Image (cartoon, rainbow, N blue to C red; front, side, top):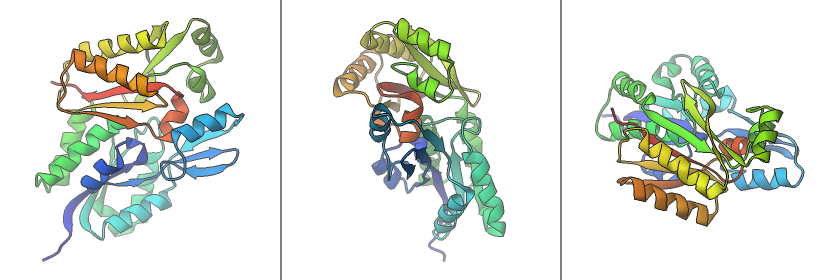
Length: 289
């Protein structure tokens, strides 16, 4: 009898799940890259959000994030298939990343071996992907050995995941072409904090909070947790460069409004952070039907 597992899960490093959680669920990741004036670095293993912030603060100009080439997906998939019969790769949303395209190209390059790899477009980023990845891993752990059944569940879940973030300023969003110069200037003049959210696979401006950062953060939290019916099993608080006091404030307000079985604070990858800037944080959860 084969010792291979039936199904294994892989994903992108921008899922922002902690290493321990990835390890406990036997989830392998592929690494994105950040291209800078000083070289091209592998996210998570070679560069962090703090590295990006310090580099740009000290006069760095170039900071371009990108999915790995298809060859690296081939390498990860081929290695993983030695220990399992099939792979479900849960990729960063196709509208905001080349991950889906590059991983599907890898599948084609693998010939008959690629028939055992199934690429799923999460439609999300950061721990929005993380929720979907953990759902797949939990189904595998619970003995579901049908890739079609798992993917069908993930497709239903995709529209129920809420991925949103509040940025401290529009400076990084302007640098990365997400908002115009006029928007950046106005946000700076009036102390406006943009709130971004994933919708239909796109990352766009959802709303704004105006004034003091701490008060704006509290308003964002209240709005997010009160405007939807939410599954209370797990909430991710994912942040880029927030202070310890910021996190304490956020967790306290979350616990005041809603009781979750698990509240997990994670650091955003350099890929995500480099597009949003320091003191960005998000509440990422699954809506209840």
